[in-house]
Length: 152
Image (tube, rainbow, N blue to C red; front, side, top):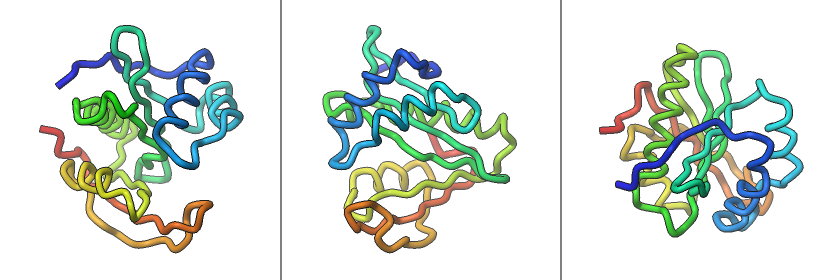
């Protein structure tokens, strides 16, 4: 496992996060959305995973009532399968515990088998399907996990 430094994202990270989005997703989050979120703290938590001062991945966590909501998780292709996402999820699990959340939910593309397998391995289970959730018309699968996650 590649050990990473986990820290909160700051407005100066916007360009790096946009580059990660472009490398990871066919339909990336827009720069203006990321920039707005980082300049208006409080609505969600952005964490970055860094290796030697370079951001290898990041994630976004929100909160709704008694559940945390993983809104985004992205790791650069060259750092995948090295524990980067797992370490980000461990940090989000800790934050969810501070928020006293009993569960975490997320949406994942129905076609993203690698992500679905990762989430399943840490305790997420299928809840429902949302038709045409993504802007390209693809369905999302809603996954839910009881907290704490199975991170060992």
